[in-house]
Every structure is written in C-alpha cells, then in structure tokens.
Length: 97
Image (tube, rainbow, N blue to C red):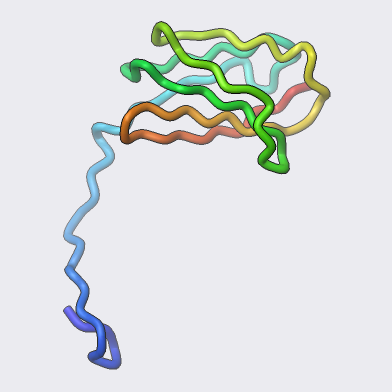
C-alpha cells in the first residue's frame, strides 16, 4: 500500500487484538490513604507512582498479583500509576483526596 503521493510503502493493518492484554483493577479511586491494585494475571510487575508532572514518587515490585499502596504521606491531587510487566505497560490516573 502506498501513501497519497506514492513515495512511501506501508503494510495494511487488518486487525489489532487486545484480548491478551492484562486488565488491572485499582480501588478505591479516589482514595484517602490506601490504594489496592489487583494485577489480574500479571506477574512480576513493577509499579511506578508519579506526580502530575511525571516525577517518580516511588517504584515497587509486586510479589503477588495484588498489592496495597500507602499514600497517606502524599498530598491531595492527581497522580499517575504505571504498571509494567514484560511487554505490557498500563497507565491509570489516581486521585488522592
């Protein structure tokens, strides 16, 4: 397949499957202090907690498919939670009240 000016060749994407992408659950969100992360079928994941400017607040390695984060020392605001495992990377917004 060529672009409109016939200068570049592209392959045609027929479909994209997301059925193997892990789904995580984060609750309660918004939270006051404790945040539970259910990693589903993800194993050996790295959880990174970032502020709204993208600064890393902390990293934590999961030992099981569920973990609890204590956010009591953080100010109220919007944060990002990034979960990475092998070829999977998931970002979720977290609201700290």
